[in-house]
Length: 223
Image (cartoon, rainbow, N blue to C red; front, side, top):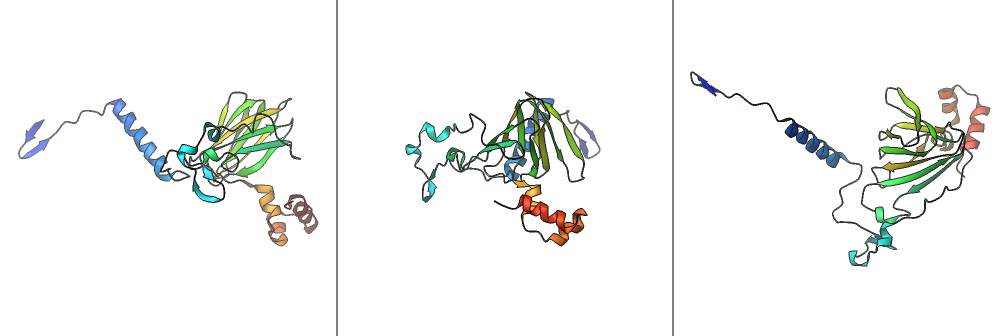
C-alpha cells in the first residue's frame, strides 16, 4: 500500500483461481434455484395420498414408494415406430415435488420421434442402444443435429423444438431425464393439424389446398 497525498491506493492481489471457480459455481447454483422449472420442496418428500390433497405421513412411506419397475421392457409401438414410456408422478408417486421425471423411448428401425417440445423442462437424452439422428432448432431457426451413438448424451434446452430418428440397422433405445416433474409435451403435427385450427389459416401458412389440409386434419385428429 502506498500513500499519495491524502489518497490511499491499495494493491489488490489477483483472485485465487479456486475461489473464482467456487464463486461461479455458487452463482450458477443460485440462478438454477431461483429460476428452476419447479418450486423447491419444503420437506424431504411428499408421497401423494389417494383421494386427499396432501402427502402421506412420512412414517407410512416405504421403500416401494421410491422404486418404479414399469420400464424394464419396451411398451406399445405407434405408427411412427416409437414406444415412449413416461416415468412421472402420475405413475411413480415418489417423484412428487422432487422436480424431475424420466422417459424410456424405444425405436424400431427407421422409427421417429416427431418434432416436439417440452414447455417446462430441459431434457437430457442418453443412447442406451443404437444410432439416433437427434437434434433441436433454436429461436433463430438454426439446427443442431447429428447422429449420436450408444453411450452418448445430448441435451435439448427447455422449450426448443427437437426430434429423433433411428438411422441404424437395429432397434434403438433412449433414456431421457427432465428437470421438471411435469415437463409437458407438444407434438407439432398433432398441435398444428389436430387441435382444430381454422383450415383457411393452415392453407395459407403451408401453401396447401383444402383437400390436403383436410387429409392432415383427419390423420392427426385426437382419437
